[in-house]
Length: 175
Image (tube, rainbow, N blue to C red; front, side, top):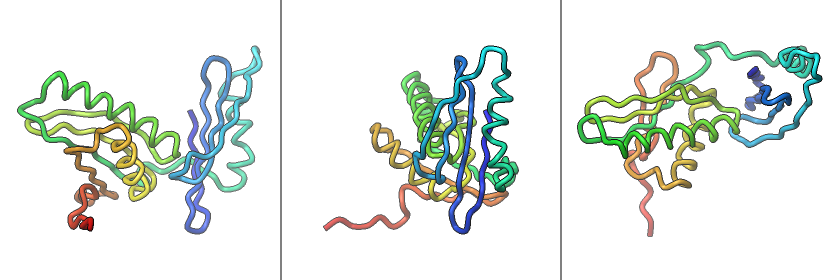
C-alpha cells in the first residue's frame, strides 16, 4: 500500500493505492471525506508495485508525499472495564478496531495500530493525519454501530498529553 498526502492551503488531500487479487485500487480525496476510487488491472507479467508507482508518478510531481511519522497524531478510544475485561469486552474491542479501520481508511485520515486492555481500561490506538476531523469521524462511526456509549475519545499531537474530545467537557443542553 502507498499513501500520499498534500497540503493545499487549508485542505489536506490524500491519495492511496493497494493491490488485491490482481487489481490495484486507487482511492483519493480530501481528508475526512470518502473520496473517489478506481481500479486498475495488473497485467499478468507486471509487478503490482510498478503499477502503483506509475499511478502515483504525476501526484509525486505535483507535491504529494508520504507523511513523516511525526506529522501524524495519536487518537485513542477508551472504555472502562472491570479488571482486565471479559470475552465480551474483547469482542467489542475487535469490533471497534474493524469499524475504525474502515472509517479512518475510507476517509484517508489514518489507521488503527492495535488495541490493549489493562486493569480497568480497554483502548484502541490509531494514528491520524487530522485529529479533529478524525475525532468527528470516529464518534460518528461509533454512534452508527451503537458503540459510543461509555467511550472516551482522546487525541494528542506530538509529545503532548492526550486530551479528551468526547464526551465533551461541557455538553450542549437540549431544550
